[in-house]
Image (cartoon, rainbow over all chains, first blue to last red; front, side, top):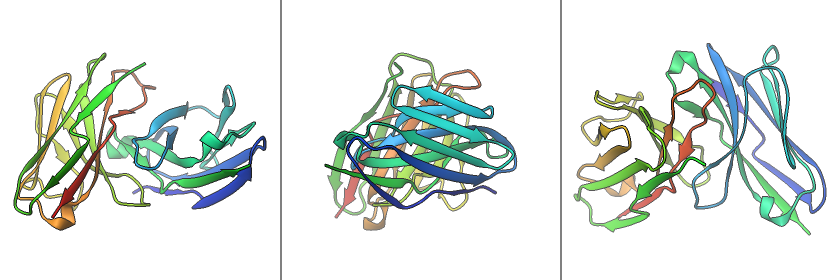
Length: 111
Length: 116
């Protein structure tokens, strides 16, 4: 089976940097995705990692270590609009092609 | 970017009613679509994987006779909640993925279903 863990809640202030961690256990790892979900809305795609290392996309970066079963999403220069739930999801070959989601980390950004 | 359209956005209906939700990929062909359910403050739970031209694959614990899935074309999948009851009230979200190893799943806007 699969197991994905991430913190339930985090808080930060505008302009700060925040790192959201995700650990996972899968049988046939085939990629890790980060999504952003605002309350009452569908998730939107942020990043994809399949090889070890850091992927940077503007204010957002995502890191993967396959040997450690670990990823993080780094958000820089936080803005109020970044307040949302951040979902870590894994594609597992043993589970078909669907993404398996963690419970999400609710990030609250204050001024 | 890839767009997935889901309709309707909101449904409020009486217990015992059947409700159909449509999911369309607007600018790409999706050989596989996925249906998720999300309860308040919880994660997305995969219900089933819908493959064009074949039967859907349901996750353990999901009743295939209650949640009917039809993937009639490369751009359309439907989920019908048959004889819905209050416990079926939830946020239902579809997603679609284009061909290719690193392609992400793109999500529709979701359907909020409330059964009275």
